Image 1 (spheres, rainbow, N blue to C red):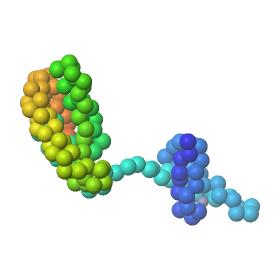
Image 2 (image 1 turned 45 degrees about the vertical axis):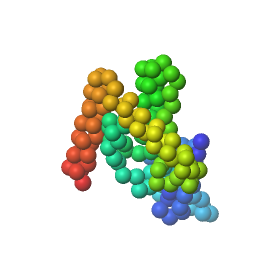
Image 3 (image 1 turned 60 degrees about the vertical axis):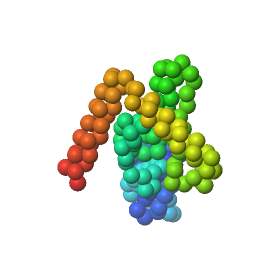
Image 4 (image 1 turned 60 degrees about the horizontal axis):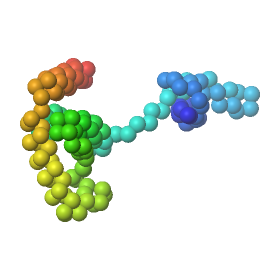
Length: 149
Ligand SMILES: [Zn+2]
């Protein structure tokens, strides 16, 4: 695994060192660069994703990844509750074509979502308390972000 760092003079380079920064070490004749090069962090961002409250999950969805996690939990819960193997899929309804969904499928997912909402209403009190705790945590995080800003 290579980690990317950026020297303010020589630009990006990769090493096996996993750290927040590394020495540049760029050689130019007898001169070796001794600039501190900052780690370049690569991560995926959900572009334009706005957190929203999802009634079917009973919680705030923060990202597509989060939605997938929630769907997985819901699937497991439904499987346990009904004894029937259940699997919920998260669909980005803003980009149907990109995920290859036609009208029939959209209708199907719409029904799935409604079914899910009904199932969601039957979730256990314990689970609800967990979700409430998660909501409180998110709210506290948001408040903290305001304080930090
Ligand atoms: Zn350098």
